[in-house]
Length: 245
Length: 242
View 1 (cartoon, rainbow over the protein chains, first blue to last red):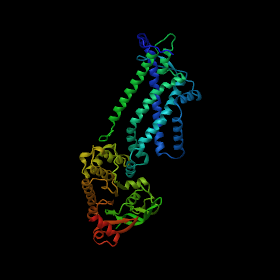
View 2: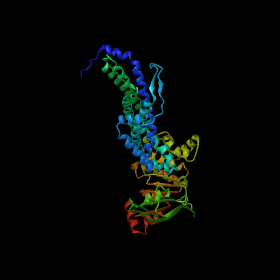
View 3: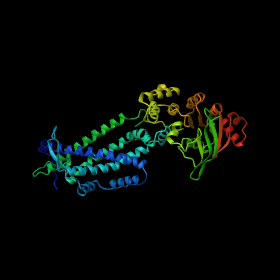
View 4: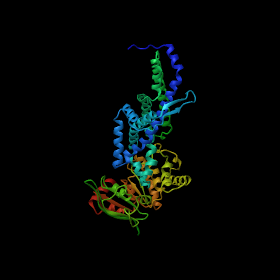
């Protein structure tokens, strides 16, 4: 296969078609935020259950985690999209503000991708939280119980605030992974950034393949970099005075 | 004399290791009871059984005549405070925040009320000026004084001290013992496990020598130091007191 050289005209093509990429970016951001939120809401309790839970509940949580972590994300997304009975939500209208023209997105595909990425993220986030919880010295828990706090109160007021702080670096990692893995939704035809880019360079007679892909890469990089910096700030903002981070 | 605390033939094992083997004694209100003994003699376990951080196997422990096992454990812990060897301050809360947590969550105080009580208790241990410091910003001795203030603020009837100075640098021990001495003078009922023989001698009303999970000898400290009945006591106290 012959490579396609970079051409000034191809860069002009990218700029001209930026609104299409912006629509893809919109979906990518939506998918990232939705998946991380789902991952947090399911992953945090899951991590706590792995530490404090018992019996069948803990076994179920552990089992689900092993299963989700042990399945390739492409397989998960395809399985969720084709294998689950999603309600027929049809096309969801999105965009229509700033530099993003209105467009419709396949609702079922968005739901399936969010569920797959979100639950897989939950499985990984649960391990970040589990480690953070277990890193809190048990003596603090005893001290809380010794002043008559219930176990739940002690977890809520002593363990969680510290565990959340210690989770930030692991969460940073998880954020980066989820953001980049949203591109896998191309497998079910969801109009995220990579899919939209592909639509552009697959147009007949188009030679702007490398230019489009480089642009997309740059967008992923900027998003990752900016968010990681923001989380760095968050970590410093909530650092416990006197403790090294 | 009405007894506040009584150990009645208390047994405790961890697996095959027998830690307490039939410990019995009692102490009255405002008493300062110091328990000494070699490492592994069961001193800390004895203390932890009182507020049920550790559950005993056999026998019973009574607080003011009621079995601690018949009580709701949270109710028990409101009446019995504890100071730990490892201090165990809540790392994410200031000195003040360490003291207010129990006041807010357990005693249900308003924010301002809890603050007032906490400040008074930090004042009592000489740390009013460190109220806004975090544990990592305090010295070992200051941390332990915050630990004492945290326990005191709950207004316990009995305060347990589990080797409160064992993890401290030698030059920081004095300030903690000083606070404990003040509490004793104020009439606080205290059960203290320590290796500080000077403290045992000068502050304790009664000294108990525990070895291999049994009370070897018990009595006024001056008698145990000067004229112990048991040779084992003499060996132990004589060696440390040299």
